[in-house]
Every structure is written in structure tokens, then in C-alpha cells.
Length: 505
Figure 1 (spheres, rainbow, N blue to C red):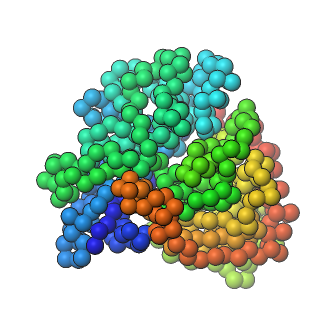
Figure 2: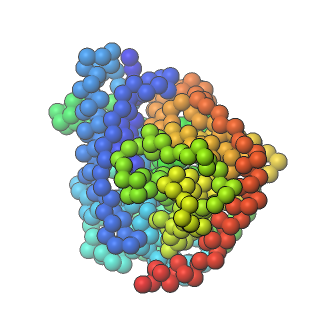
Figure 3: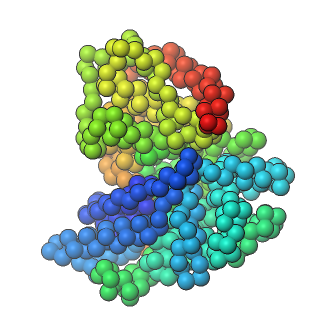
């Protein structure tokens, strides 16, 4: 049996999977690693933890397949995706120069201000395809230049997590078009020389840009000796996790709504590339070219699945997966009485408020509330955050063409309580895919394209399959939309000053 090895460098763990040409999972392995919270807004990871997890995962899959129909020689290709925007700095020999500054890090406040003051807004907004925030890689890089100049002098290449893993597999420094955003034109791959020169960033540290389905190189002999991975397997460039997950969710035509549900939520819609999107001064969404001459626009929250995991681990005191933990109360399954509202801002928030100082709130707490109410409030808070982002999508796209369904994938799609609450709050059908880990599946699709086995449309048709449809309860939807959602939005607005004051303590 021929299989594809796919790798997903997640925020909390690396997943490695063997997937066949039908999009079916054959084998999988998962390895966790820590995030280092140095101080508020400073979050880092050790790239060697990613690599050790990848090696362990590949080794386990190869070991488990020795007595099965799969052999080491049946691996046709490898693809990797990873969290983003994350800054990885290596020297000429590929040595890590410092821990990776991950996507959740927002220390570069001053650097964002510097970029806006140094460059005219019309100039940098014409280049940036996503909001300029402290999380942006360009802001992180300037922070490094300002605060660790000796490290900056040694930087040979700046990589994303999947680029670093690709280097370890092949010895090649390359990245994909969208992973190079901030530094290159995402349509052509051409480096923004003038932009970088004005910020005194050397062009030489930007890796060669290639399409996400292109072959970077082949696996090296050293891996065969170390973990048993045969030499010469083609390695595909891959893409950042959000885009790869959209590929694996099966988005192939315009006006398809999607939600990648995991540590955070990605909420988006595919549109015709010819549609002219007006840019606001504070661009609230991400906008990238996609396959089939589509444009994908989406927004991203900060801590949805993380809010659930925080509650289960620290409040419930359980190590169970949220998908296996049942927290329901049949006598009070809908908040018409004693409503409790949760702001899911436990790590600040990206879309739509872009405020790293925002914090989580439980509002309306009284003595009648139980752990069931808290859990439901968290799920509803996630649903409200999606709805608030969805309103922006409606405002910047053709309202008449937005479908009545939302295609959901990612680890959060396995939580049926969350799926139903999303359907009820949005008033839309929620459609889940059979293979929820869309980042892994998207990587397999890119391999099939890179090896010229399938076209994009063929790969999606053969490998992405629908699982369940959650129908909305419209009575609940009207209650959520008319009564609770307005309070949810006011909670942040009424506490902006307090969030700022709290952050200064």
C-alpha cells in the first residue's frame, strides 16, 4: 500500500500521519512539547522539540508498519505544515540561534509603531496581506534586530516551523509563497526589496520562494541511519497550517464558508479573485490568493480550543480530551434562565478586536451556576466570537452569495457539543469532514499535486469526504442573536480601558 507521510507542527504537539490516496488515515502518532512563557506576551518554543517529535512520530509509524501491508519503500512523498506566524532563525550550518518566537507572542508593540512611523501607511498596507500586529513576523524580526543585535548578525535564514522541518529532512532552505508574506509578493514570490531596505533588513535572509506543492528536495541518507526513513523520498514545500487546513477542508469554489477549529478558530470565505476588496486602515482580515483562481479571506481568533483545555485541566481537573469529556446538564441545557456569558480572551484576542491586552471574563455569575454552565458558556463564547467575525465577512463580501452552511474541520470539529452550538448561534448548518485533521489531509493533497498524480480538484474530490451535518435550532438562534450576542459585544467595549489599566500593573 502506497502512503503519504504528513506532518503538522501544532502549537502544543506535532502530529505525524500515514495517509493513503483515498484520504484515509492509515497510521498516526502525536508528540507533545512545551511552550515557554517567559513573561506576559512572550511565548517561545525550542525547534529541536519539533524535530524530535517528528523523528519520534516517523519512527513509530515505520516501526508499526513492519508487520502490516505498508513498507518503508511505499512512502511516496512527505509534506509538512506548521503554526504561523512564527520566527525561526538559523545560521549558515542550520544551527538554531535562539528559541522560536511563536505566533501567540505579542512582545513587538514598539516595533509595530516603528514600522507605521517609518513607512507611509499607504506603502506598507499595499504590501501586507494580513494585519500588521505584534504577532507579524516582520515586527518580530525588527524586535530581534533592536534587542538581540548579535543574534541578528548571525542569521543566515529566517524560517517558519515547517520550513525548519523541511530543512532537517532535505538540507534545503526554501519556503512557500504565503509563508513568505510580509517579505515577498505572495502572488509572484518577488522579495519586497524597497520595503526591507527601508527597515534595514537584509534580503539575503529570505529563503528561496516556491509554490506549496513543489518538491523542495529528497530525504537524506542520515535519516535512514537515524530513524529508518529511506533516502530519496520527495519532500513537498507545504504551507502554513491555516492554508493547508483550508486545502484539507475541501474548499474548491467561490462562496464556500469554512471554519478551522483548533487552538484558535479560523473563519473565512472563498471569493472570486476579481472582487476588489477595500482595505481599511486597520485591516481586520487576512487575504491570500488560493487555488482555482480564488481569493480566500479569513479571520483568526486567539484561544478557542485553548479556553476549553484550560477549563478542563485547571477547573475540572481532568486530563481527558474535551471530545471525550461529557459535560451536560439536561435540566438546564439552554441559557434562557440565568445566562452566563464568557469572553474567550484568555490570551488576548486577534480578530476582530486585535487587542493583546484583552482578557477572559465570565459575566452574569450567580450561585445557581454549576460546572455545566461554565462549560456551556465557554462553548457559546467561542460561537459568539465566530459570529462576530462572520459579520465582518458578510460586510466585505457579497451577502447574497454567502451559503447557509459552514464547513468545519480541525481537532475542534470532533467536539459535537461545540458543533451544535456553532450551528445554533450562527443559524447555519455545520458540516464536518470525516478526516477532521485537515492540516494533515491538506498536506497529503499537496503531495498528490506535487507528484502530478492528481490535480487540485481531483485530489479534493477523491480525498475529502463529508461526515455529519448539524442542523441549527432557529429558536435558539434568535435568542442568541437578539438577546445574548449584543451583551457579548458590549462586554469588550465597556472594558477596553480596564483591560489597558490591568495590563499596566
